[in-house]
Structure formats: structure tokens, C-alpha cells
Image 1 (cartoon, rainbow, N blue to C red):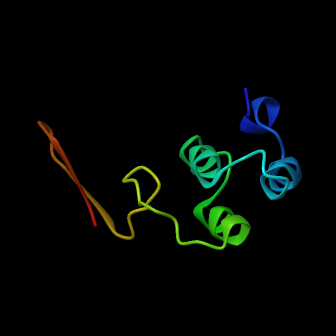
Image 2 (cartoon, rainbow, N blue to C red):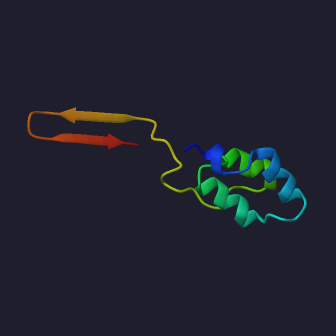
Length: 76
């Protein structure tokens, strides 16, 4: 099941937010549910996203070391 199968599209979220039916907290929840991006949150609310969750940030440098007995993954 895709997110666009269960969540409203951005245009509907925007309409309901501007109409006062959704709060900033509701929009933050859509980001946490991976329905909106942090950039969309900021564009819609005009505010900086209140917190950066570890699962929303993408590592820039990933190193994987392997041998026959173990695997080590390092991410920055």
C-alpha cells in the first residue's frame, strides 16, 4: 500500500491547513508519517521544522566492512 493510497494529497492538506482545519502539529504528523517532506512542512507553515528525527535524515557517507565472520556498517 502506498502513502498516497491512505493519505490526502498535498493540495488537500494545504487547503485544509489554510482553512484552519489542520494545525502545525497535524502537519508535523504528516511529515512523521512520511506523507509530507520537511521542505513541504516549511513551505506550508512558514516555520522551521521543530525537530529533526533520526529516521528522516539521510547519512552522507556510508562505509561497509565485511569479513567472513562479521559486518560493520558506519554512517555519518
